[in-house]
Amino acid sequence: MRDLEELLVRWRQAELISDEQAAAIARFEVGEQPQRSTLIAEVLGYLGGALAIVALWVFIAQFWGRLEIWAQLTLIGVLTVGFIAAGTWARGGSGDAVRRLASFLWFLGIAGIAGWFGVFSNQVLDVSAEPLALWITVPTLVVAAVLWKALPRALQVIALVGSVHAVVLSALAQLDPSPTDWFGLVIWGIGVATMLLAWGGTLQPKGTSYVLGIAAILIGPSMAAGMLETAWPLWLGLLGAAVLLAVSVPLREVLLLIGGAGAVFVFLPQLIFTYFEDSLGVPVALFLSGVVLIGAALLIARLREEVTGT
Image 1 (cartoon, helix red, strand yellow):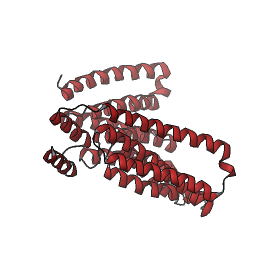
Image 2: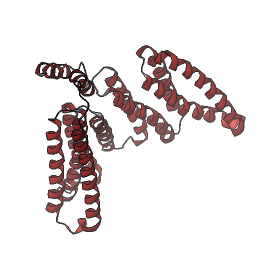
Image 3: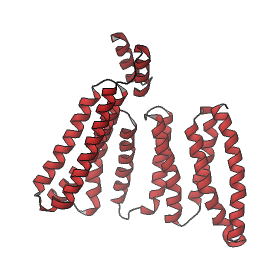
Image 4: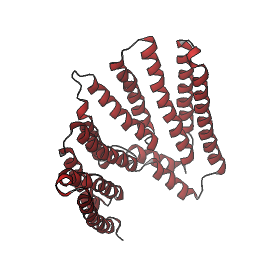
């Protein structure tokens, strides 16, 4: 059993397998199912974290304004350190349930980092409104990156990618003039980078990273089209849909197929209405959208058979 643990550690460090796969291999080899006590500990950990958040929310609503700044920072700091320390302790345990608990506690710790630096930079350093976001997002990104590297699970990669979005947009907001109209394309670009890093195996877990990248690819062009008041970002979104559909078959990735299908259903009707609403009228444009989407649905159904092999 000791040899198996050492092998699993080496394989995880070499990124040959994920934490979930390592746990599944260990359970299979020893013929064990997750122990009930471990699951109970996980549930209690979630419940304790949720109760702490609710208690903090009630406390903030009633007494936060009466506290001195040092007391506010101390309270947030103690909770943040407590969450991170508890997550570190849980991470040292065995079993997938304990690692999920560690991931949850670390996610709360990352939120605490953002809260602490928000109060510190605003109340102690008296940072003005424009750079305040950077004082919050940069430390949060650093901590999120460290914790994701130590435990690359879904909540950690969500915190990491979300922090990247926040830092990049906050940095661009400092420019004069600020290119806020282009924020949608920036989000799209980060989404593309997220997809590529997930495909290359750098961002783990891959499934969650794909979902985050797809979400940015869907949101970015729609936002850019509205802010720039032009249709060409929608064509960019439709091109992204075509790429996702095309690569989903050779890669056999259902998530890419779903993302491509979602992009088709988001951007294609917008393009049809943009170009044909005035000339054909709303009813005809709506009918044309329906016909095109039916054709797209049939194509996607065929691609699904190729991806899943069914």
